[in-house]
Image 1 (cartoon, one colour):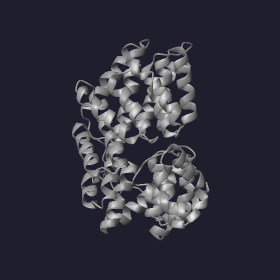
Image 2 (tube, helix red, strand yellow):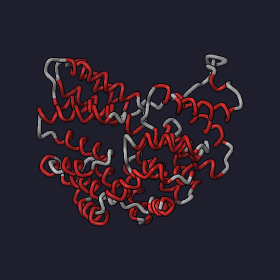
Image 3 (cartoon, one colour):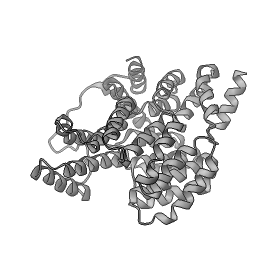
Image 4 (spheres, one colour):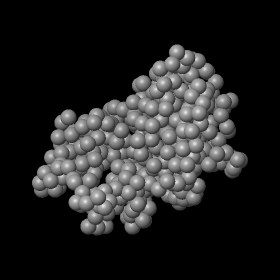
Length: 390
């Protein structure tokens, strides 16, 4: 609640009045309030899947296909409404007497998307107790544990994939975890060797591998290789996570115009609007101020709903756009208690550096040292804060 009040105060200071908090009424029936995505291939695919579910209500596979497609679209378009649709599709099957491990795994995935990792892991444990050879459950479990910074357990969950999944999927899982534990060079090389032989893999798997390679190369400090991998991934498809990662890559290199070109039509997702606004602010574009106000309102609404999915991005907004480092550090620390990816470490280090208070983030510094996490973006901050605390 306190953080929500802070955001509302920032919103008030940016607008100068409370007009933004009032409901808006269109002046006529012809006025366009929002443009929804066009009804394209995905819409027709969803329609067909829904027909299959309705025509065979006792069949499990159509339900799994529809829920999985909703989840894919939710991730690709950074639209949480699709996750709600998936949850509604699965609900009757969770209430039935016979619980299927695949349904439990998809339910865990929905918790994962909301960063509710404890119930997600509980559902996965139930699924694996019923079907120990369910590869998707092991993969989802590994990804959650990696995000939590539990690298040993994550790697343990990757190992069954050597027999239960394709060579590329298992290698991405293993390499991603190993790259965060002092084995970044060997992890990168192993994944590079696995990619050429994976041309028959589904597009999503190949793109996932390319993004993983890009992120590892970026942490290694190999900008040329990282950009090549990002561009290869973008040629396959565009999704919210990839766009955010590549935008961050461009922001770090002050390539602000390219960020605005990349994201100019991607303002629906908070994560992408944040990165667009950071670029606009650097370029001193007139659109930056309106987008700052919009982000403040969105984050305030999320906090009031109890939604903590974007705490890391909200902390970044507070630090770099609202210029409120104290609140940024508080939120970054709360976020660190839930997830511990390199980007989560970065915002907490940047906020502490802005406040010159290394003692407040000593646990984070200890974690990075113990994990032997290698990241050229973090190291200057770690060195500076470590010197200040000694």
